[in-house]
Amino acid sequence: MTIKAALAGAGAFGTKHLDAIKLIDGVEVVSLVGRELDKTKAVADQYGIAHVATDLADSLALKEVDAVILCTPTQMHASQATACLKAGKHVQVEIPLCDKLADGEAVADLQKQTGLVAMCGHTRRFNPSHQFVHQRIAAGGFAIQQMDVQTYFFRRTNMNALGQPRSWTDHLLWHHAAHTVDLFAYQAGSPIVQANALQGPVHPELGIAMDMSIQLKAASGAICTLSLSFNNDGPLGTFFRYIGDSATYIARYDDLVNGKEEKIDVSSVAVSMNGIELQDREFFAAIREGREPNASVAQVLPCYRVLHALERQLAEH
Image 1 (cartoon, rainbow, N blue to C red):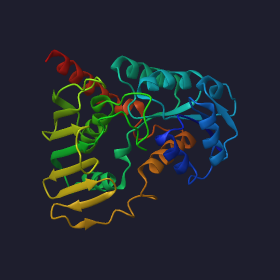
Image 2 (cartoon, rainbow, N blue to C red):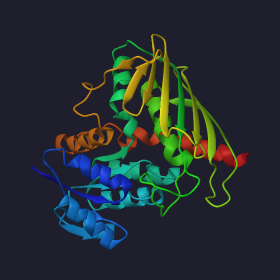
Image 3 (cartoon, rainbow, N blue to C red):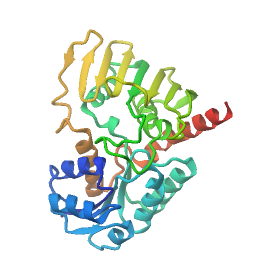
Image 4 (cartoon, rainbow, N blue to C red):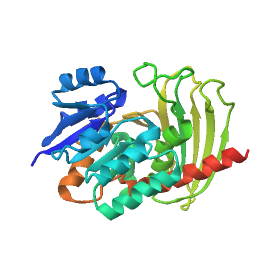
């Protein structure tokens, strides 16, 4: 059976998913939702998608749609995920699940009631470089003592991943820190029991802190230091250093090296080197197999509880 999917948000990230889905057998995108009809039609034509809408409700009304991938602005994620589940559709929502904890908890509760697949795009769980480390941990050959993570962008104006003006404001805590907070608990195999945060000055126009520092501790005793910036005029992206009991690994996107900068081949870790494709494969496999996916809403919810606690801490200072 072919799984028929709708995708909402035909921007920089939406097209990454459309490219990934082309590589997955038995899945067809039948509906595309975007804010601007002409631009959305142009993308739909490029990918051979028949139905185009500016309102998600129009896609959800299509009986043939089994599943939805949401690549819309952060502020819409939880409410749109709720709408998908209420319409009886499986849903994968891009990171972050929510920007308010209560909204994320509501999605998790609704998923339990419906039994549908609800997954969040925590891509780091799927990147082969991080999967390699996870497999070493699962095999008992490596245990994390410390993770040192730098998430750096140069975004003093409001741009998306393609360098185009953005219609909404990104957030270091609820979006970019979510990747690492979740990954740390996932790789440590242990819940986060302590979390501290400091932030730099608030940008006068964007209204958000452009620099942030976060410390985490897991119940296992492992610690994590995360530095985030929208001010860094240098290499962009996130760099992860795993310091363990038996080795050191440094992950830069899909590249992995050891502490001596010797390259580790991760090309055979999974069927692809593309984290988005692997994430989408997991989503559609979970639907077919009637199981909970890796990075299910239920699994990632603890990460948002930590972000909520950090937000309250920052508000007090």
